[in-house]
Amino acid sequence: MYEKILVATDGSPLSKTAVNSAISLAALCQAELVVIKVVPQYPQSYFEGGLALQATEVGRIEQQWAEEGQAVVDEVKKDAELKGVTTLAVTVKSDIVSDAIISTAKKHHCDLIVMASHGRKGVKRLLLGSETQQVLTHSHIPVLVLR
Image 1 (spheres, helix red, strand yellow):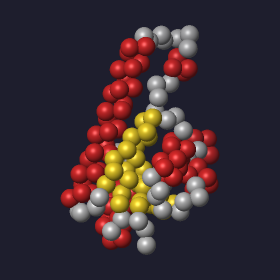
Image 2 (cartoon, rainbow, N blue to C red):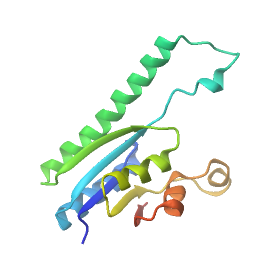
Image 3 (spheres, one colour):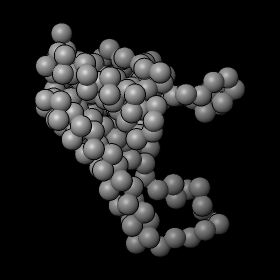
Image 4 (spheres, rainbow, N blue to C red):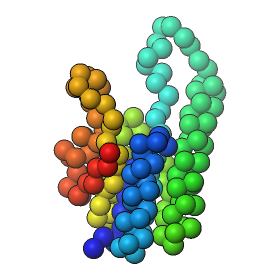
């Protein structure tokens, strides 16, 4: 059925539901699992004229975020491999989460993307948007959304 499944996680309880389902589906299909965590870049433009940080401090913060992101995907990889699922753990640095997810799925030839719903409703959803909605709208790869 599926040979390679990408699951996106941010480490939140809602995304853990998607991760657990993706691991189970990968085990059932004997598919490889690609776990992705998108790590943001430091938002320097938000602080222009207000708070000036040195480049070394920005680099340290971005390194910390990258290490925390890697820890999230490594934990998922460990859990998946305990269930016999071959897993690739990937972190991608990007400010556009949906594009990073879609491009990673294409790069690794995934035939399914698994994600959690955003968890926002009403006006917040309209104002803040949804990465899941963006992936659903722009991906040519099937997307399974879990709540």
